[in-house]
Length: 268
Image (cartoon, rainbow, N blue to C red; front, side):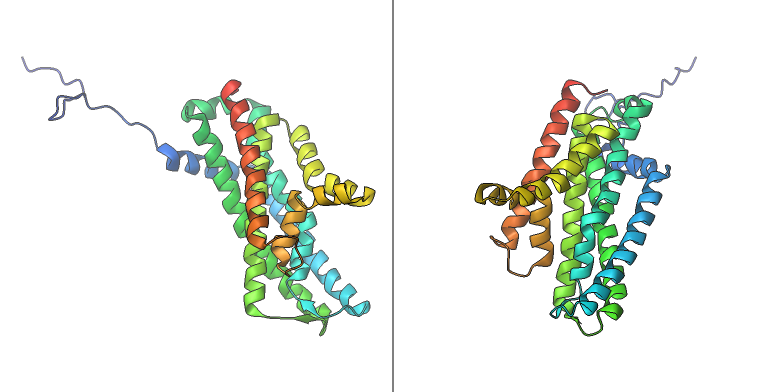
């Protein structure tokens, strides 16, 4: 009688050949990509950002002409629109995390990818890539739409335009990474949006409104303020652009650490 095949064989080293071990980080990233584009929220966020960019930059160029503002880089219109469009990307990045907690599908995700840090890293990297590419597209669109209304009140220098477009992409990517970290830490859409809005927008406005040397000094280190300096790149920042970028990285890293600590202690 011939032996029954078990489907498990020994390799030359005498080790038992194992079955599939999973897709690793690439598999986790691919899974997140698929999940992201199977819900409506990302499409709504991207469309909203596109509309806001179009309206804002056209309006910015028109106001600069009407008020006879000094000549400025045409990319300033797109950079200024980020104060609003960044929240479309915040909601997109937040949804990648909070939608799974709201439906309890996060349990399935963590069964598929048991390494908790890998799950968070995949979501963070994907959100950063989407944020980077999307912001650059918005930047180019804003420049194109603002150029006409400026009517001579803006200058087009390719190196400056390229820098501001890439800087917008980098800032938006880091805001997305920060959002993913906060979302893992708080786990609810309302809590995550409230925290991001407070830190990124509300708190800087309060610090500037209240004034005083201490509060104004603190404002210089807030993400939106740093991002504005970094994206404009006009040399008016209190420190070099590289330092602004480094502090933004610290903000994003701190949010990621907070999210990972919560995920490891209470994953689902």
